[in-house]
Length: 402
Image (tube, rainbow, N blue to C red; front, side, top):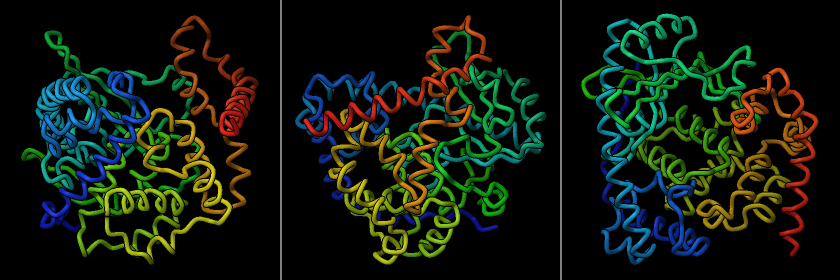
């Protein structure tokens, strides 16, 4: 098993490139929203605040986004820092408990990125602890977590209808604190309307050891992690700029030794070639990440897909990725990123008639507001959802022509 090695030797050389890219994204965001941007509801910017604070002085932030928004950013940064101090301590406690119990876990996303590919852990804050676990270890893990104060909960009420859920959620909420620790135990990537082919056994076989706050753990191989993060960013319709920056940092992490040929082979095998192409293209075009031309040429999507995405859906990626107004475009891109033109028909059918799990998650707020409604009736949305989707599509076309 190879030890996780990250190249931070060129970190300082990225500062100017990052400042230029972040300034561009902030300016797009502010043009789309003005100084009245509400960071409490905004999806694109808030989680990126630690990176913004590290790259810009308070005066520079005020110049970029206005004094009011800059002051709110600094306030949110202090809260985020406090929360992460609590989560860091809890992560150490949980990793120690898993190690003592002899239960293998694989950290990924926020906590793993913070302690492996980011130059300083405080730059990558996180709100929960994502861990991959062997399915046969779940009973022992649930008992162990209950023993240290965690309680199980369903993230979506409709999850109880899913025969094979990929994730299990646990929460620790101290009685004397507003802070809480959330753990998501995954046995596999969760259900998705995106065609993908993750090999869970291969993720475990390729896993690499890391040490977090003195505690041993595993994390995904950098190539597996990058492809997972591309999929995750697309799954959530490219909603957070932090997730784009995660890709920037991990793509840089291997330096000149990054095995791009291996990434291309896995992306094609996992039906993520087009997804990886656009994610890596944005990393290159916006942040100056050195992606070899041959990699993008090999991953290049079919012509029809490129026409839809680059001409009609995302002609200006920076604006679409940085503003709430770009949400509809991002959702369309989420659906259109296929590896073969013929798959666009399947995408259309999946969009109109998604899986039971996706239907349940899509309309979770309705179930929460109408908790008296039996979950067995959620199938009724199969008759409603296609018309809602078509209506949204028609409205988008009308607005675009106007």
